[in-house]
Image (tube, rainbow, N blue to C red):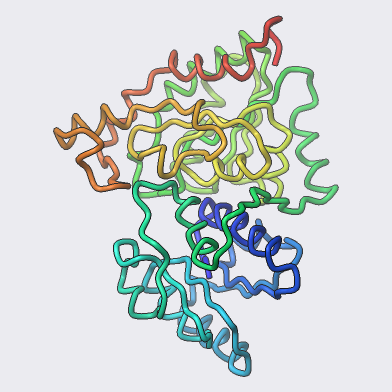
Length: 343
């Protein structure tokens, strides 16, 4: 069971692949959120049961009816929230494995009869692999293979018909009311000017259909000296994944697209000042993260990161001001700046 969010479901998929590699005859069912299922739909070897968080009681009742005659050997309760805890009661399983006490938020330990080992200062995905390790499986399978169709790949190809490298920018976090993760529009505009001027980059903007993201899209379109493609609010999750797969680079703050890019092995320049990249950063692109979290922590809390609770966020929107366009461009150059100036 992992209901949300997009990034965390991307982290959960390699754990599933690890279990499948170790136990090829075992059948797996994944209880997942409806939005997240739109990305994962078609993943081979798993039965999906979707949960609609907009109507939690009705959805929970429907899942209870669907599972009333079924019994599972193991429940991997990989989502520590009260919503997931209540939903877990619909699953009859002999072994109910949850997080260790420190990570079993909202009383998850009351809904489990086993706990994974405590992990010290782990990345979220490493924490998820604790469930496989609890079952005696230590060889990891870092495989995502989220299926994409010809239509999604054709859509992606149509967005960047030129010869310059495709750079996708997802400027905002999905935390609509928590803009402390978002970089300033002016900084993105300066970065886009350098991308287009130095690398002749084909820039595509992505994001959800929210007020803040639409504001960013319109402002960046207006500021750009050369055309860019504003696809904010205009892609499905699979179309976005196909676009990121085709890209030479993704630039974004701490948000779901960073982990979608990891799933298709696209380099990510992550913008991290409000959250700890070692916990939530792009798993395969840590060397490209522009990391100002230590400075932001010192400024807000007056202590080094080592003295802070693991995963503590910085809530000050001004923290992202510690990230400069020059620092981001330096990370971009590591990806696009080949010996002859080409990717």
